[in-house]
Length: 98
Image 1: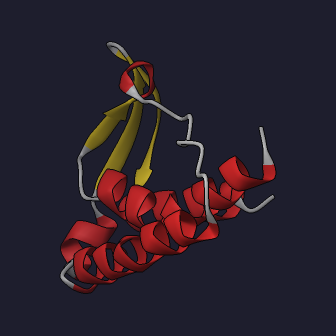
Image 2 (image 1 turned 180 degrees about the horizontal axis):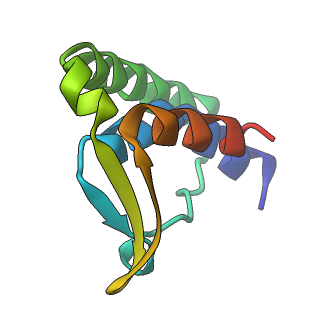
């Protein structure tokens, strides 16, 4: 993975994680985890702005009950794990920055 692809991945993390968190579950077999290849720094910066804005909008509208509700990671019909949504957001965020 090129440095540009890694930068694009980091730029889109806030929006991607918050979008997944708003769902009750996610089927990992349906995901596309390859970031686009940017040609210029401007493309990365252009991806970061809406990603952060989307995350802020989604997460600021989340109620306590939604944050405490379980979120499930699936592989087709098999549940890989289930935990409170707030913990899942934290796990996704920290896993991506390791």
